[in-house]
Image 1 (tube, rainbow, N blue to C red):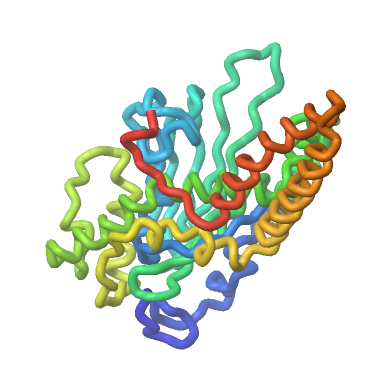
Image 2 (cartoon, rainbow, N blue to C red):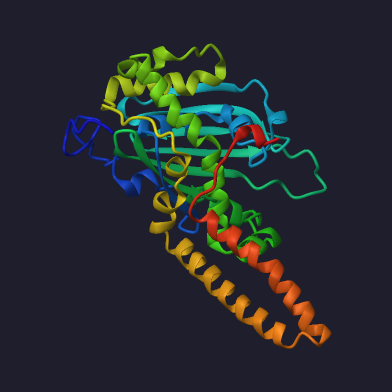
Length: 338
């Protein structure tokens, strides 16, 4: 966790008049309609920040979930502007889901990383791709543990840009078939995908911290890395900020080798999420109703329709069992992620 140097600001010093450390300032650009997701993670606040501030890991760590390994190209990171204790910004260009992307990353010390980027528009016969907007609040909860609050969705338009767009008759339309389809997907199903996304590099990050500890590099984690590429610039800048303005406390807890504990979705997310609690209860209710329907169909098995219903029920029961397990625990092994 972060050293409580000051009761006002955990990274030290006195709060400014602008109140940049206040939550409402940190998430000010985020639209109230953005989807949110929260999870506790078995690695520290600094490791979580480092991971979010590193776009280059996406094609490898999240292969098949957000693009593929074939998307990997040398990242162009430029225009890094450091704002002292308040964080830094940078411009990046990468490729994801087979499309070039360019935008800005913004670390709002000490908790928030925000991305705003546009995809290339190569086919002018189609609408422009939706912009990429992501805000992650990275909160220390204990040594070796952190909490990620993820806002996925549009940012608030500035007043000036909204007014000019309306005056020019180019205000964005609110209706989108994709958005309508997405709105029909239950929130708990979206959260199951988010769980898998975070699972895909969870073990790497957990053991990375332990390796840094083994190298006796906690005081200056950046010295434990070899970072010669432009893609490493945000990590170098972040580690420099931590060294100057924060203190990551130890001792770290021992490594967790039991994968059921490491990927414990129930305690890390489901037990605290009203949407997933409702989804878990709904699946249990659907399974009980399916068993009852199967029993009735078996009693009326002389009719063809009853036998068809029974076959559907038999097919649904394993699906319900699979979904129910996803709320509790699901392993992720990269050697099986082709």
